[in-house]
Image (cartoon, rainbow, N blue to C red; front, top):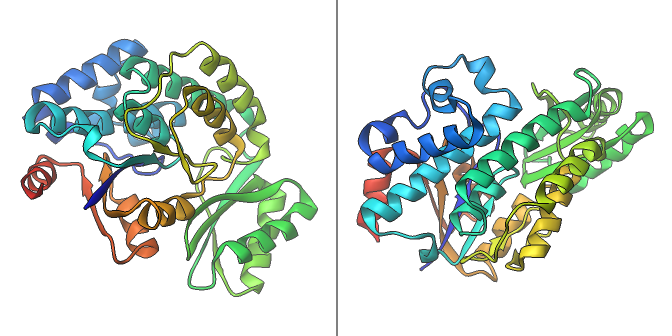
Length: 314
């Protein structure tokens, strides 16, 4: 039974995440303390107590979500003897790619935290608030072809592209506000439901180029080594192990499409994965997997009880 570890992206954060792990496991507390030290910030207190609007800020949500994923992986290794190498592949949704690389040994915990803090700040600053937008196209007709057609219609008014191909029935577009507004109308005319997302910036589109430039600079000096487990990359939907290729793809990822549906399809097909395990806050990715690869098992690990049940199943 081939296994893949998956790591969630922004949107899965919630006040209180990681608290049960910290209360139960010494190793989880150590991970949260190390992230706090790396950032010179009491991030765990924010995760524990909020306020929600501060936790949701991109520069806080990104390292916080990684910290929960890292804590779960640390507990699996320290308390249950389950290393990342038990998986055939790792993959992460957007910022989750950094969590995956940490889990696979390509990045240190401190460097991962600092890179995500920088990534969040750069993405927030790239486009003035109110100038960009994102929208989710949902429903049975909302596939990639419809989303690309809607984005083309929107691009008549500005930048508009498909940002996240999550699964059939859930595709996200991103770009300038006027363009996304036009794309929403076009999508509705084509029979899809289209909902503007409450986001602070238009992620994964060309408007994020200033953030990509900032991450190119930050990643240039980061220590990245070949992961112990191949990463199925967002922008290629294929595995990669070469450290310099990973460095390049992390820069491309800022403006590029998150090809999540294709990534899961590849892992469930050529990759031979029959069990997908979402590591960290929320259950978003497990839900996506069930829609993409219904014959595969999908589960989420974010509580002590989840971790114990998973360990007992191996």
